Image 1 (cartoon, rainbow, N blue to C red):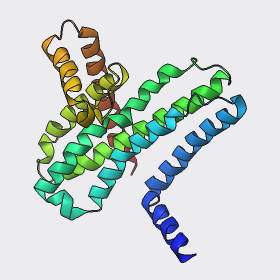
Image 2 (image 1 turned 90 degrees about the vertical axis):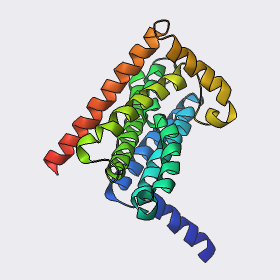
Image 3 (image 1 turned 60 degrees about the vertical axis):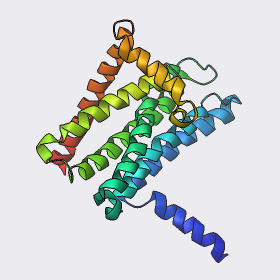
Length: 228
């Protein structure tokens, strides 16, 4: 029995370390419950993929949270650089879920209002996980970059996030393609960079999402400071 209780306790400690983690866990559980209810109601597994997307969105938040609790890694340049590179490759997964709103109305069987609540729930969770993870990293980067120039971190990160969302949604690449299909990924990215006019719609989306995410991030950041 002790061998069972200990892993369960460790699991709870992993997800419930703070009030924010508790709220996030409750919010994510709500979204997963909606997917389960839809499967039971319709007998179809149309939105099961969103649970996987949410899991991928959680990984960057887990990494950044771990860094904030591990000062030795956050303060040691070489260690932090390695983790940061891994984080920058997967943080777009958090914001990618916003584009799952494209699926609204494309899967009949449940009331439209229910699917709206389901998809918005996942999009909201992904957005929160992304915003909080970026904020974690911003605080750590402030150790290396003075506060007034922290935009050197934030603007490029949000641009890369938007670029990653486009690559994932339209070019259908995943984070692990960096390892499994690096040449194909680099070839498509090179096409976008070398022929910006030909891919002007792609760059329009990237710029639009960059501005959107910057506005959401800075707004929530300002509001949190004003209220708390």
